[in-house]
Amino acid sequence: MIHQLIFAYPKPGMSEEEFHRYWLTEHAVKYAAKIPQIRQYSVDTRVPVDGVEDPPLWLGAAEIWLANDEEQLASLQTDEFLNGARLDEPKWAAFWRTLVLDTDPETLLAGDPVDPQAREVKLFVLAKRREGMPLAEFRRRSRLEHGPAALGVPGLRRYVQGYTRDGLYTVGEAVLDVAYQFTFDDEPALAEALASPEFRKAREDLETIAEPRYVHTFAARQNWVLPPTI
Image (cartoon, rainbow, N blue to C red; front, side, top):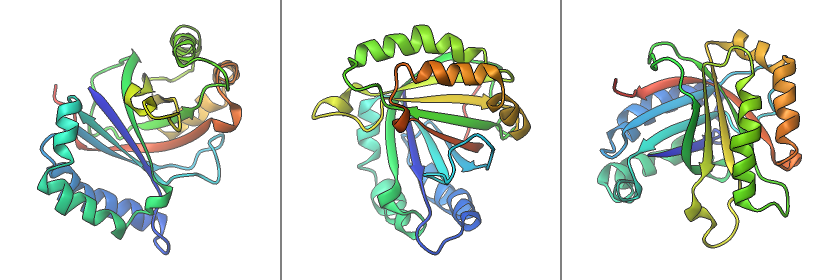
């Protein structure tokens, strides 16, 4: 399954509160969720937490799950996208500050079944491998070395490593190579995790394989629009 991540920032003049409200109650419900190929969809609204990149590069993120390449292509040709979601985006988002990552997710900690009402908090750690390191080597060390270190972070409910899909390297380098996703019960649990020696150890380990200047952190509350089916 393709896990698409879309990080966004409000258009000039729009407050963060209004940005979140419009995305959740207008764009997500009236447009994006109606695209038939989208299997799951959430809107993640930023939460300010000490230890996370500040000022933030983005104020929200969409998570979209699609079955395969064929359905993703089909979704971009639907009326719901062309005359709905795409036309609505300039009303609330600054397109020049948008980052889109299509990833292949690898779940290292599945945790309990998702409760759509829980509104868990997620930490995204986005990274680019060190200059000169082959992509295959980065992924291998990420899975086998960094993954176990990350799993030691206290309070962790779920952990996913989302690797930028191979197709984004066919004509050059992808902007980023991976999106690590840590899920916690709430903001206090995330704050405690960020302050822990286990998280510091995981961050230090990451910087042995990633360029420190291209490591970005973003914390958000997950709001399900199309939750997973049990």
